[in-house]
Structures are given as structure tokens and as C-alpha cells.
Image (cartoon, rainbow, N blue to C red; front, side, top):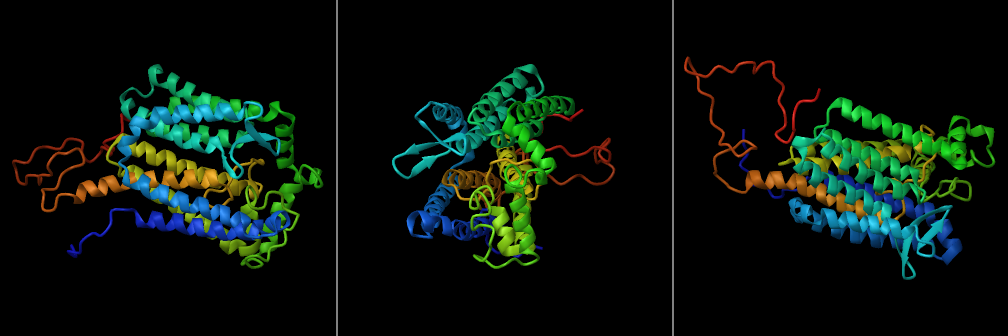
Amino acid sequence: MRTGLARTTTYDLPLVAVVLVLLFLGLAMVYSASGITALDANDDPSTFLAQQSAWAALGIGAMFVASRVDYRVLRFVAVPLLLLALLLLGAVLIPGVGVTAGGATRWLRFGGSFGLQPAELAKLALIVYLATWLGRKRDQVGSWRVTLPFSLVTALVVGLVVAEPDLGTAIVVVVVALAMYFAAGARLREFAALGGLTAVVVLALAVAQPYRYQRLLTFLDPWSDPQKFGFQTIQMLYALGLGGPFGEGLGAGKEKFGYLPHPYTDSIFAVLGDELGLAGALVIVLLFLALAFRGIRIALRAEDSTGALLATGITMWLCFQAWVNMAVVASLVPMTGITLPFISYGGSSLCVGLIAVGILLNVGRARTTQRTSVPGASRRWRDGRTRQPAPRGRGSPDRKGSRNQLPVHRWSSRPRG
């Protein structure tokens, strides 16, 4: 039964609400986790909050713009955007240009306070490029003409990220690229081969460097060296344990006061667990699950393969990175240095993530706009054919095998096998 009420918006409002809740929770946690550090450094506990709020305002504006610009326009900027990301990734590695902190060179500094982490831009640039390229080549996915260029482009981005070094971000990039390749129509054996090769390379990189190998040993037994290599892992577990069911209260956590390394970036989920408890941690998990659900829903309902791949890549990126960060805090995976999207402090990560959400909103908005743009028009199938009622009676055509065939999305290239 139709209510007859006019639709007032074409945006995915539940997705917008989820992202805004994550964003405001992140601002609160950044203020709580960074206050003591900012007070010691600048005599102002709100320094990091002010910077993060400025990036959040810029990101929300960019998200709105991205949600209004037709995602199909991205095919004209996909290659230049990827080239710009590669150029910035290369510039980071030039001595004297990239900024080194914590043993890694991952930032470019412009002026006194403005900084950029090119790896964050590279994630979005690669997603846009693969979505537009694989969207045009979906009928050839699986052939060497597609598999080889896909592998080379992904390896180039990953190689520059690993050289920073940043193995955690490199793993996220590879997983997102493989997910998009599979969604584009790759057969299971091709996907398994690329996945197996990736696992071997990641394992080799993990044991090639002494500090990465030590991280693997620490993951297996952090109590073997609690004062040095296992210190951060143990303190994160302490923070989660101290929080209990409902936490010590926002701002009242103890682990951030000199015990927990990187409390407002990599370890912010541990601070959240300390101050908001298991209940707060579960809220964050449920919000990211809701984001995953809305993103997958948009991908499945996208108007074309490019939109479906964009939604797949963005959703996989944000949710998988969130899972890795939370899994590190819970000591479920070895230590990495990636942030929690929308929660951790970091302007580049926050702003680029919000732009990605804007693109995701536009993919969902495109389908809704097309369906509601012509009032009173005859209903049509997604491929443009007019929807006609099936003839009834003896003259109706025989639908052979219709009961045994599974529906295939119109942007799917072919059955897998």
C-alpha cells in the first residue's frame, strides 16, 4: 500500500547518520585521549581537538560536494588522480622532502601545520581507478589482458607504501583491490591464485625485517618482553580490561596518562574501551557493521558496474581497516600502525574517508534519483526495458528452468566457476 507521501531526499540517511555518529564520537575521544599531551606541549588541552574539528568541517563539506557530483564523472579524473597519488608517494621517499616519525616516512609537510599522508589519498585513487577500469573491462576479467595490468598497478601502489615502510596500509590496499577484482567477475581459481600469492609475499615481507619478525613473536607471546616489545600490546589489553562493562567514564581513563603509546591515533580504541567500556566498544563495532550493510546494499543496487565496484571498494576499505585496528587492540592480529576510520586523530585519513563516503552516497543516490525523476512514467527494469505484466492463461510462454536458475545482477560479467 502506497502512502502517497512525497520523497524529500534521495540520500541514504541511515548511512549519513552512522558516519556522523562515528565522527562525533571520534572528536570526543580525540579530545579525551590527546588532552594531556596537548597540555604538556602547548598549554592548551584542546589543540588536537581544534585541528581535528577543522579537518572534520572540511571533510563534511567535501563529502557533500562528492555526494552531489555524478560518480560517472570520476572516469575522467581516475588516471590523473592515480598519477598524482603515485607522485606524492614517490615524493615521500625523497630525503629531505618526506617527514619521518616513529621510524617511518609517511608524511609531506606544507607550511608549519598542514600535513598530508599520501597513502590515504592513494587508497581512494586506486579504488576510483580500478572501479572505472574494471567496470569497462568486466567482460574480459580473468584474461591476462586484465589480470596483468591489474596486478602491476596494484603492486606499484603497494610497493611505494611498503617502502615508507607501512605494511599495515599495504595489506589494506591489497585486500581492497582483490575484493574489487573478485566483485568485477573473477573466477574463484583466479581469485584464489592471486590471494595465495599475496599471502606468500606478505609473509615474506613480515619476516624479512627484524622489527616485523619481532612483532610476530610479540603477537604470539607479548609477556615474553613486557617492558619493551610487548609493552604496547599489554597496555592495550589492560585498557580494555579496566573499562569493564560500562567504562571508567569519558575523560577518566588512566591508561592514556603515559602508559598507552599513541593514545589518540593507533591506540584510540583502547582508550575508548577504557573510558566507555564494553558497551562503548560494542557501539563502535555495531556502527561499522551498519556501515558495511549500507555500503553492500548500495553496491548490490548500483546502476552500473562502475558504481557497484566503487561502493564495494569504499565499503571494504573503511570496514576492513576498522576491523584491523580493533583486532590489533584486542591482540587478535599482529601489531600494525593503521588508524581507526573517523575515530583516530589524523586530518588526511578523516578528510579522504569523508570524501569516499560522499562518493558512496552518490552511487546510492544515482539509482534513487533515476527511479523518482519521472513522476507517472511507466515502471522499467534496471536495463531500461519497460516492465510488462506476464501474460496469463494457456498462451503464456514457457519459462524453462526459471525455478532452478539464480538471479544474476545486471552488472555481473558471468557466472563463476
